[in-house]
Length: 273
Image (tube, rainbow, N blue to C red; front, side):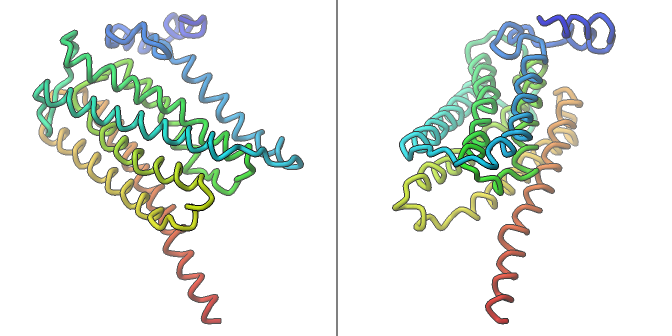
């Protein structure tokens, strides 16, 4: 553990108490370590790059990142996302999870560990995805770096450190499962759009955002169902996830309206004028 984490344990009783109830299975796993400082440090580095990267690049030529690099990076995330989907599906099936309400189960059973381990892969993928923004900055695609983009990327790593530290099983499976399905489609689109000859033939970008909105509705409904049902899963974890889904629904809906509805109407009015 870091000195700062030791300081938090010494001076903040509630944090010390919470760590006593952390999942013992993940305490030594890379970037978890029952210590938020490495994850917070990574997130702060990411935010510093977002803040100062465009300033550094403002008067410089954009970096040329080859089609091969972009295609390979995005396809690697497609494969990782597909692997996460498959592992969660198999783990949930073998553990006979209740799809409406699955309690938290701290067990070293191989199938239960299969789910916990793949949730770590999902958590770590959020750090890998910081490269999305770094590529945008290097290529001077600053308009793509919206508040939604930065908030989503930075908050997911922190959120999933909490999940991996305290509640890496049970109800936690649903969000990563659906999100990874979305990412298979989304990163496939990005991989194909990196090929110049295909870029103008990809017509389904807007439907990715629609799929994301549907995903948030399903996960929110699943979470609310667990709360109403009185699911034997930490209530704070369900409330945290439910609150995050509401935030994502609002932000992604706002993005969709501005990107596809308002922009389309403005284009129509411009043509009429």
